Length: 535
Ligand code: C2E
Ligand code: CA
Ligand code: CA
Image 1 (cartoon, rainbow, N blue to C red):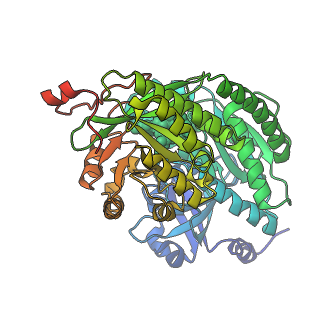
Image 2 (cartoon, protein in one colour):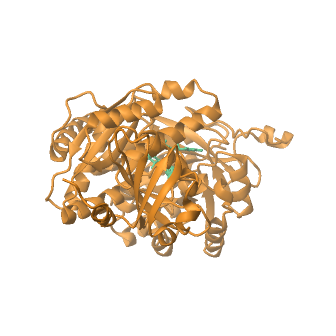
Image 3 (tube, rainbow, N blue to C red):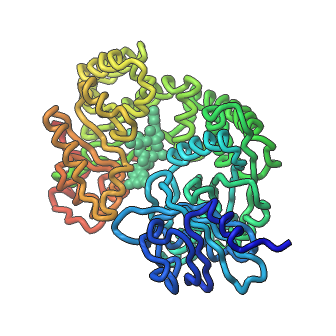
C-alpha cells in the first residue's frame, strides 16, 4: 500500500507541533511551527547542534536520550527547558528508525514543566516525586496511560564512585541522574532513594530488559530493576500510599525477594515487615537499647559551642530518621522521648563543670501529651543541677494536633528554666502559624534551606527576613546543616545567632568542643573550650 506523504505528515502533526530530524546530533530537517515552539525559524535551526538548543541544565538529559536512541525504541516524552533567559519548555519524543543512517526523528510540542527545575545530577526530592506521581496517577485514570513503577538498583555504584577523583565522581552523578530521568515519564518522574537505589515511573510500552541495558551502558554499573504495574482505579490517594510503602520497603530490603505483582502486594509486604520492625523497636525503647550522640551548636558571635544537640542512635548506629517516623506512627515516641530526656538530664547532672548544655528533640506528639511536663518537672526536681541547662527542640510539628495545648506545655517547660526551640522551621507549610501561636525562645531554620544557600548566588535574603521577624518576637535563630564556610558567612551576615553542622562537628558519642577548619581560634576560645553561658 502506498500512502501519500502529505497524509503521513498530517498524521505526524496530529501529535506534535514540530518535527525535527537529527543526524550526528545536528538538526538536518525541520517541519512545523519552529518559531512558535523553539523561538527560531526552520532555517535558523537547521545545521545547529540539537543538545545545545537546550538550557545547560538540561543538556545532559538530552545527551542521555540521544546516547540510547539507537535501538528503535521510542524515548520520551521528556520535558526540557530551552536555552535562553526566557523560561520556555518543550516536550520531546525521539525515535531512531532502524536502518535509517543513524537518523533520529523527534516530535516536539510546547509544554509546561512538572516540578521545580533540576540542576545537572539532581533528581526530584522524594516529596516532589510523590506529588508528580499523584498527578500522573490522575492523568493515567483519565487518559488510559499505562504506567509502571521501576525500582532500580546499580550494584557497586558506591564503590565505583568512591574510586574516582572528585571531578569524575561529579560527572558520574550527572550521568546517573540524566540516565534515570531519560527513562522516566516526562523526564522528571524519578527520585534517588539511596546511593544505589532509584525509583521512576515510566510508560509500559517498552521491555524492562531494554531499560536495564540502556542504564547499564550509560552508568557502567550493572542495573537491576523490579517493575510493578500501576493498577487502574482505586483512587490516586490510595495508589500514592501504596507507592510510598513499596518504596520504603525497597529502600530497606532492595531487590532480594521476587518482585511484587501489584502495588497493593508491595504495600502488604511492606506493612508486614514494618510491624515486625515496630515490635523490635518497642523492645529497644522499653529496654533502653539505644545510645546518645552529641553535636555542637555554636554561637556565631564567639565560634564556641553554646550547647549540644542530643541525637538518638539505635543499635545499627545509623540515622534514626526512619525509626523515629515509625515510633511516631506506632505510638512509641512518647516513651522514647521520655527515656532520652531522662538520660540527658543524668548526663547534665554528672557534668562536674556545669558548663554543658543539652538540647533534646521532642516530637510534636509528645509536646501535646498530658504527662510530659510533669515527667520533666519530676526529673529536674531530682537532678536539680540540670536546671537551666536543658533545651527542648520541637520536631515533627506536623504531629501537633492541638496548638493551644502545645503552647501550654511549652510555657510549662519554660517555667522550669528550659529554653524551647522550634525545629525544622520552613519545612512544613504551617511554620508561620506556629510562630504566631507558640511562645518560643529559639527557631531553627531547616537545613534544606541552609545547605543550598551558597548555590546559584543565593544570598540569604529570605533568611534575613526571617531573622528580622524573629528579632521582633525576641526569638533567637539557629541555622542547621552548615557545611561550608561560605554558608556560615551568609547566615552570619543575615544575623543568625547560632549554627550547627558538619563545619563544626558531626554527632559524636560525647560532647566535643566545636571544630571549624581554617578558623582562627583565639587562645581564650581554646581555653574556654566547651560552652558559653546561656543568655
Ligand atoms: P534533626 O533534629 O533536624 O537533626 C539534624 C539531623 O541532621 C541529624 O540527623 C544530624 O546528624 C544531621 N546533620 C547535622 N549536621 C549536618 C550537616 O552539616 N549536613 C547534613 N547533611 N546533615 C547534618 P539524624 O541524627 O539522622 O537525625 C534525623 C532526625 O531524627 C532528626 O532531625 C530528628 O528529627 C530525629 N531525631 C533524632 N534524634 C531524636 C530523638 O532523640 N528524639 C526525637 N524525637 N527525634 C530524634
Ligand atoms: Ca533537632
Ligand atoms: Ca532540624
